[in-house]
Length: 62
Image (cartoon, rainbow, N blue to C red; front, top):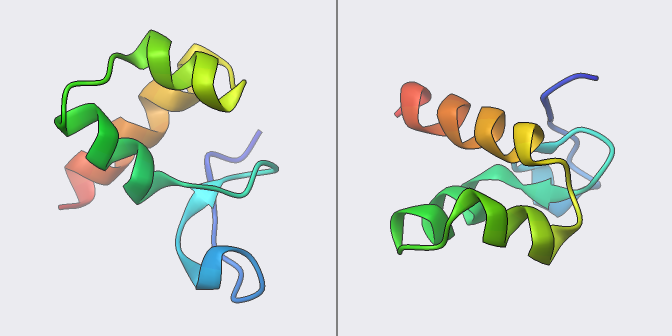
């Protein structure tokens, strides 16, 4: 599975978890605001590992 995908037709071109349409920046904002990885995985019905990798990617890119 590819971690991130950018397509101008999905989420206005923002990076998303591939195959989900979930913007990585939104996940990172929620994580930095105090939401746990488990909460995000539950809310978005996505594998915990995918959430962790997306957040790690966003934080390292910044």
